[in-house]
Image (cartoon, rainbow, N blue to C red):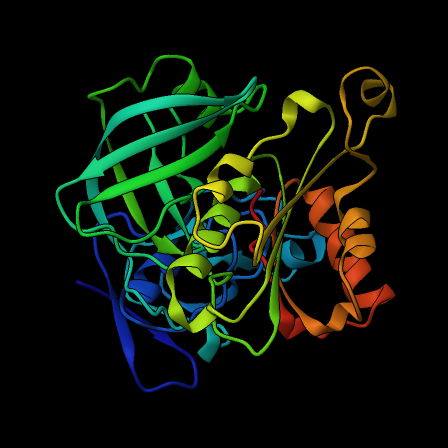
Length: 337
């Protein structure tokens, strides 16, 4: 069995099978810093001090040119070939509350949510264990590497995993899921849970902001708020944005929750004015602008969860942290959309 030692720490962790350094560490309960697990964010950088690794994606977007010159690597994209010593910071906040594990799941059904987004329902033999807002890595047929998708439902003993997934033009994962490679009865491997943007208790009302398939983790968070008595005194504002009216969805999930319209509120906006003139009676503008206009009082009085296209997530973060001085520890998001 291969063993990985982190420089400056006495304990080591094992790596088995084709696990990346990151997944092996998290599976062993180590707090290795990460966000996306797919090579995009660059949070899991490390330096190899001793040993040999296979770099699965040397040109991953999470590495800058400076990183490459300094021979830094991504733990999520490197598979150990021998015992290794690495230099990497440990983050206590990244210690997994639920240890991720692999299992085989079967596609039960899929259903249309919008013109380009569907809900995929998988079932496994073991309980589905995860926190609201977390994601899993799916090993899809014909796709090189794993794809990260957030769960839309809540943890359950029956082994149900539900994902809201957008059909991205040219996306390998999309082609597998929407193009017929995965059909009802198909089995795939699921690894999870992962992600640090999960629902947590805080003495503030809650705001969810979503766009595209960012709907999935935000629906899970909303369901978690509705189901947990610890949040019974909290208001939840759910904002969803799209370009056109046909992109808007999500309200039906919230309508089914106890407390809808009393303490759970849905708000939607579209960003293309031309489309609004003909078919949209609601708000026109960017979803983060709608949030700022709708919320009462100081924006720093809320706890924020958001997910969606990178431009949307960056705009939300900039508005909250720069324009309204919201502390970073009140913002919860994973950078992989």
